[in-house]
Image 1 (cartoon, rainbow, N blue to C red):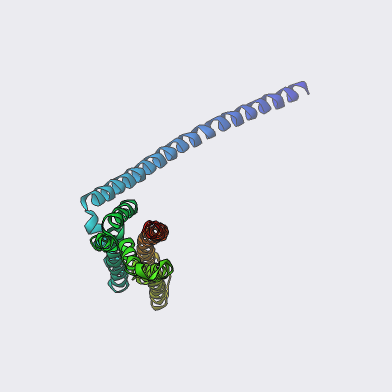
Image 2 (tube, one colour):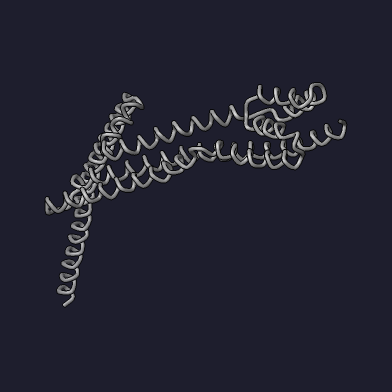
Length: 276
């Protein structure tokens, strides 16, 4: 019996030893395979990264090789010559009117303090006619208002004041001339851009319908056109809006100078009549 138990014990020990040996051999083979797989994956990822870096470098070199004019021309054609041309025309007309207004407003700016001093000296030395001559030789709406007021000086201060107020409204209208056209182009440019967006999306869906399948290549053209026209319209509107606000601020400044100078002119005429 003892011999039988000892035999069973020896058999058990041998079986356990063989299982342990198999368990140790198995993971070694698996780890080797895992190392090989990881090495292959690293090589593949390195190749992918190298390919992406090469593509990025190629794109950068392509962009660096193109001038700004070439890039804008390519985007203009990509956005669709029809609507892009209309948006660019809105920009050209808006810029032309804005530049004309800016030049006119800058030329209309007058050194009001110097003009008041010259008018007062001319009144004291040569009377109304000398003061009118000073205003006639000075450009700007302030000098024009002074001239109209001095031209009615013989009819009393009340008539001078009415003449200054009435002609001040005329000069304000001249200062604000054509500003409505600038505001029209500001509103029109993004509308045209959004219309190009809608047309581009319609073209993209028509391409999907004709192909019967959705793929990036089919919708890329329409979406690109939509985005380019929208961005162009918004850029045009922003540029014209800045110029429009400058013109409005300049007009407000000139109108304030006209009002202050008109009050000062009434005071000067009052002193002149008292001295007479």
